[in-house]
Length: 151
Image 1: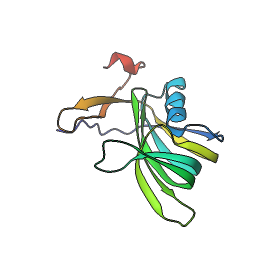
Image 2 (image 1 turned 45 degrees about the horizontal axis):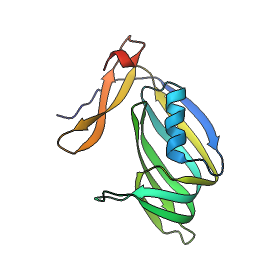
Image 3 (image 1 turned 90 degrees about the vertical axis):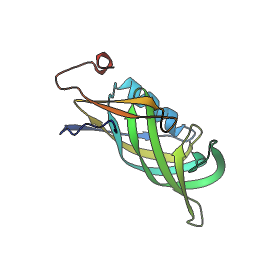
């Protein structure tokens, strides 16, 4: 059975900009922790990379790409216990690649990011024996204030 919760929740948007040389994934993790976001999602992101580190489908290791890339799409879930992000990038010829975002995606000119924090929910990454990966577990916190007390 998949861990899931069906819940209506309020969304609080956060908007900010990353600068040249910032690491996309590390910056998102630091933001999630510093703002105590228990459950979040990427609403939109536009920008560019000078280096991309993506793990392609079915691969164990990341592939490091160095060039100038446009961020075409960034999607994912955010939790203090970890992020799950997928990104599509386009090169100067418009060729698009996508995969699992790893540390080492370095901003070229900018990344304009809008994140949504989902009140009343907490996301946790837990090892799933079936997949071998830390997968999403969702808790409806109801009136609880501190999501760490749930786990």
